[in-house]
Length: 85
Image (cartoon, rainbow, N blue to C red; front, side, top):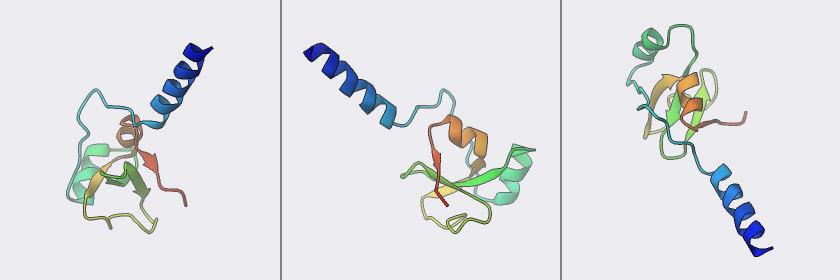
């Protein structure tokens, strides 16, 4: 019984941790550079320390000191999450 409890706790903890990307995340200082790179994928503003991103039009887009522009699909693939509206 104790083994099952430890396993369950470990799985819950693992689910809460961000997924590590197999490739580095492309980050850009300007929205224009990100738009050129992302092509048809939406550009988001990613705050790196919080693993949170904002879509254009949301209040935090382009606002944090420790962030940059990247493609939405890459941000999600790297374990980041969208800031709830």
